[in-house]
Length: 205
Image (tube, rainbow, N blue to C red):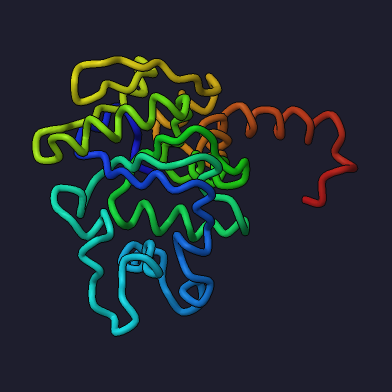
């Protein structure tokens, strides 16, 4: 997956609480839609009107947020079902980080496995960032710096966030759990060779 170091860009304010995975990607899109196609359907229930046209009021349909790499959200983001397709849809829409007061545990785990950074900041801080962005949307950029574990707001305000050390290192290296395991392939092969010599009866061939 793509390594995550630092991302700077517009941050789309979508401060509704309890945005669930069914809103992020409709369940029927999980069948017959490739992972690469899911971005086009992210937030479809809010992004599109009943006739299929774009709703100009939805934040991701407005400039400069149409391809914003950062989303500012309300508490309990990603609740609902455990579908990994929700993360694929956000990533496909160009979103690299979501900043919210809290996340569903399963959503956060799926995000970290797919190079999408969930950043937890106090709700008051998220609201201040959103207000700053709304005041000057065309000029207000937000930076998420994983190397320093900080978010830099549009007015230069710096907010530190916490992340598990192993998860941070994996994101910086662009590795999911499989990639982390394969990084130890040499040590695994060496152990297998030693064990095969010591206990040949447990190996089929």
